[in-house]
Length: 250
Picture (spheres, rainbow, N blue to C red):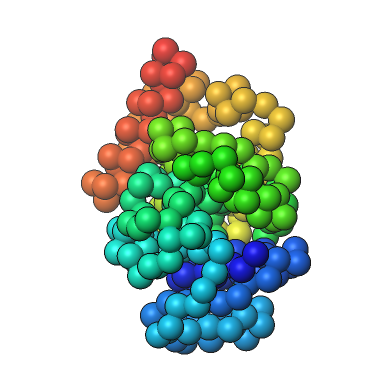
């Protein structure tokens, strides 16, 4: 089973790591960014090319969503499986006569962050049973959590992930702006962040909610609003507090 990764970003980097860690040989990593490809090649002893795409049984297209269709056109082979790694687009975004699949890892990836791949859920989708067996087998080489998810289900998984991860991280960035402006070390807030995150391993996020909005503490809410001079930040503050109050019908 020959595997080729197409792309040189965070997902390609981590899939290269995950496969090689688990004894799955990657025959080539292919893309346009020679500098990044060289790094992946050196880190995981995988041949790379920016010009000639090798022959493989399975190609993983690890590029941004808007480029998946165009990039997939370079694969001219018909007797193979081509899988993209996006949670937000259909497998039919892939353009070719090959078997089309999705290989979506539900995780946020940064190249220098070590991850436990066995704990990452992988959601797969294929256009036939044989491809499903192959893609599922490769996913299980990496992860203990492999599930089927069609285009519609995967859209909701991705939407949920944006709320749970991207929006949350943006709030950390906004919180750090406030702390930095007042010369308050952001490290002070890390135990609070860690405890908040840990709690939802043990209870529903709705039950774990705390803060002035759920207490309907209008004096604190008003005092906070008077401290915020950035209209964008004020809008975030008022919108989220309104959402909390509505969820608890305060």
